[in-house]
Amino acid sequence: MPILLSLDHLMEIIFTKHAELKFGDLEEQGFKLTKRQVEDALNNPENVIKDERDRLIAHRAIDETHIIRVNI
Image (cartoon, rainbow, N blue to C red):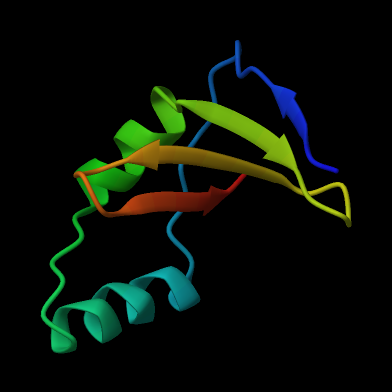
């Protein structure tokens, strides 16, 4: 069961090669995701959970039908 957490510290945002490729993949599928949207999800998440491997994941809705999940 995921645990809800809060982010209350500053962090440097680094976009990995995988993330850069994902932007292109999504755009090819007709979904434009910007770095600004990802940064907003990290800086102002609606919630943060720990997954089954104890990795932190920030969630933020970007419209009525899409949610960004960003590994922290």
